[in-house]
Image (cartoon, rainbow, N blue to C red; front, side):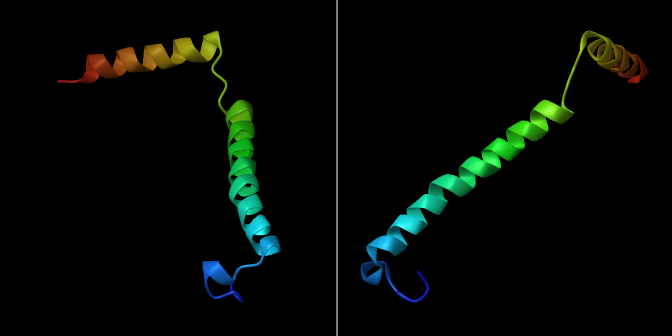
Length: 63
């Protein structure tokens, strides 16, 4: 892509590589984000109750 200088001078292989990265790189980032989300952000019933209690305490502390 750098060697071509402009879009009109890009080869078919260069265009294919560019389009592949436009699809593959975002897909990999989305997949990595989803895996982090599934692994790190788990809210079970016990954790949910703790969140609700903390929020209730904060509401009581507001002036």
